[in-house]
Amino acid sequence: MSMKEILSDGNSGVNDDGDVVPLDHAIWEPQGEFVPDHYQGDPGDTPPAPDRGLPIRTPETGASVRLVDRAIAIEAIMGYFNQANKRVGLSKSRGYNDFDTRYGRGANEVAANMSKKEGRLHDEFMRSVNMLLARDGMIDAGFSPQEMDADGRQFVRELYAEYGPGRADADKRAKLVRKVNKTVRIVVDGKKR
Figure 1 (cartoon, rainbow, N blue to C red):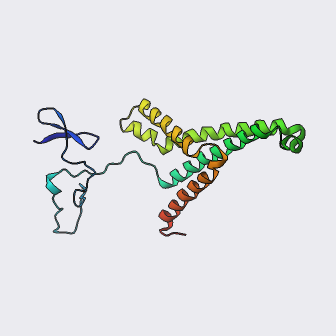
Figure 2: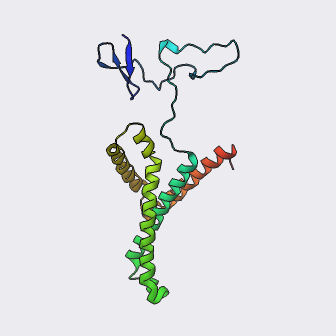
Figure 3: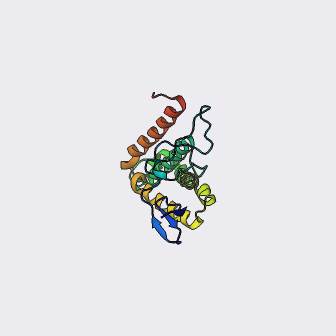
């Protein structure tokens, strides 16, 4: 049985009869040495044949996120959670801490500015979520905006569950920011610091 077309999931294809059938193995399974279409090896070299006659998939430029952009987005997301945590903490404790005494007549303005800052950071939070999901690139690759919006909502729920506003999660947020920044430094410098 031969395949006329391999489907985008990489695990199924369309046979000569037009039926969708599973492949014998997943495309991501090791297939021997990868040889790009533009192989320019040493003179006289021939590219090795694909293992078991399976097609060699050439990577295409697609939706991706650079490590530096990922680090910036993670910092923005965690910054939003930190600011939301401050605002929630203030609203819960304002009646019994010295906030009003410390800021006097300006206390309401300070509290309002904390809320405004949280709103600005929420906008950055949403831009960062879309960037981490490579939303525009995925839509260009054929995913529908509705699919990407659903993925975005699920991702936001997972972020809130794992790192969401709350003092208990502040250390996890700081650890994640350190980790992604360390990854960028390793990639850029080529060594650990």
